[in-house]
Image (cartoon, rainbow over all chains, first blue to last red; front, side, top):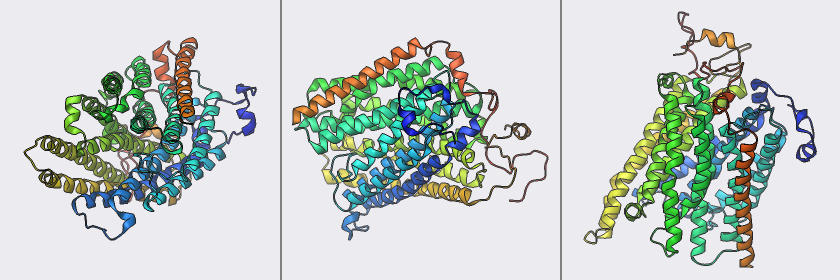
Length: 494
Length: 71
């Protein structure tokens, strides 16, 4: 582990950056082993916890008496616990692991100060645990996406500061001449997230702004967590893994750079489209709608890049687990983003607002895009950390098909149901209770899709646990490892 | 106190925007926006060269012709 200078020396601006050697990829992977394992395993635990909360909340939507006797499992609490467990527990832990594994690899230098990241992981997970327990105990702040009680959030700040400091050090001591587009995305995301989170905490919880400014800050934050934190990390992973797995460069690198800068310019404005029809100045809403539609530029640019890179290589989807998950995610990124831009148009928003359509859309973004890309990344990263093969191809296939089919049923179902719900709510001749009743078949279907996704998560968890427990046969080389080129050449590329 | 937080938010926002503009300027000055073909291939090296896939499903389909391993 090449932590040559001390942490203080790494942070000191006068320390020369040429003391660090350019490292072999295998040495870089080895240096990331412990922090990456801690983040990935805690992400997986949170995924399972979040899934349980999700199922409870989903069942309660069509069977309100389900677990109705427990106050800490009422819908309002368990739904927020689900959101926070999967956003801050699963997604952010996975994003951290993938971000710094990619960052170390692309910077071509062994990971320095792994202890800093492990301490950050402990603080982060402690913070999320306290936060989720606080929500279940009834201490939720009731501000969407910031439900964690104020006594949990300082721990998250400490964790984030450590990760941020580490990222700056890694970037500064990089040994790569070129900054690959994934590095731009990751570095920017690591700056943007603390900005969003701290401003939102201050203006909503510590010193709440007045009136509708609260709503504006809330949706600026909540939408940008998706657009300026999860989207960049997901795209960074897709921009690395698609060309890397295929062994062919991205279709148009020029477009990827254009995509990054246009996302940086437009996304920050888009969040206020959640307040269309609300009591906020019309120009703010119009600016948000314009920015939401301008997002078509980075989305189309990214779609052209990801999908045209795949052209001619679709056969590889059968042989590579990583590619399957990442390409599924990339296709859904295109779909969900174009849907999102359409939903910002006033006439569309009048129908979809306050319906299950939004819930389906959110899950297509966070699950069908982001979570699937993270799954794919973990399938690529873990064998290289543990120097072991995935124990079961059947479990990988079960995971993929359950998750992919489950989430597709989920969002298609809720978007159809939500659209019908919105049309009926806009029709004054249909009583409200009848509209509610008409959503039931879609809510039941959603629970079935949720069960399918849960089976996928269990297959994934069993495979990871099995892999961690399995002994590595001496001198073993395996197709997913790519440690031993002669052995790789013997393996057929099918 | 409320005004103080608005000031902080505006200053931090300007700082973030400024850093983005500086990053774009920096990348143009340091050749990051030139020779895009080379940039695209920067993720490949001798160890993991261009033209070779780096991810496959695990065994047993690894070696054609060889007796299938016990599963």
